[in-house]
Image (cartoon, rainbow, N blue to C red; front, side, top):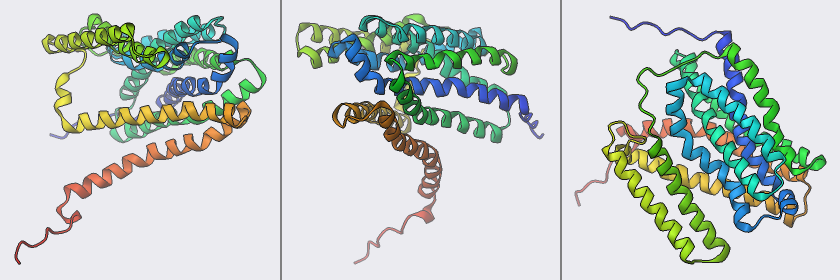
Length: 348
């Protein structure tokens, strides 16, 4: 018996995809514009070296640490509802960051931005799967969604450089406010609500353990970078490792774990995760230091530094779109005996 043909998406779904691109653009823009703003906010707020590292990093750490939790929460309360809650929180946190009077308050605002950003990413991808049932259309929609992240890395330095040229450093955070207002208006009109009837239980202790373990270890490493190795650094790193061990043991006991640890036994999964971690570590480190070098060493203005950051972002866009094509071709070649030369003969 033939399987039913999935319905094809219409104009409303494609307009909804355009709405879903708004948070994806903004999430990456909020990462890249800060790199240009670091010299200006450093002169104004006078943060310590450790505080500056937290200002830069806390946003990304909390996004990564909260993604799985927020994805499960969206399955339970509704993905569009979570998207709207996250958009409102992101706009509010953007205003707090823009007008933060101290480094400590800016770190807190950036942390709230990270939690809010973690609600946006899984909600947008899950809604795409709901809106685009046809596999071919879904592939196109996901490709457009991924390109939104790459486009944000190109737009961020340009827009951020222009704002820093004429306004104070906090203006780069206000980019999120009008974008989120538009999202809050259009999302109820164009996006469907979706739930997962088989959603797993939201395990808050596991989420807290994983986040605390990562942040404690990072705090210890940053403390070593600032003042050197001491008892505080050793204690926080050991505490983070201990909480990480408790987290792993808890996942092994739970019937519905936050992370299925069996995935790490799959070589392809582990290798891909390791390479992705290395790629993110190198790329974002390069983005940060290049932005500082262009302004503090070469003396370029924020606008000039933003323009010089565009080639790297464009290369990232090209690479992210070419890589899947190369992977498919390499995979076919490796799986085909004709793709490899014959082994040498064993005869003398």
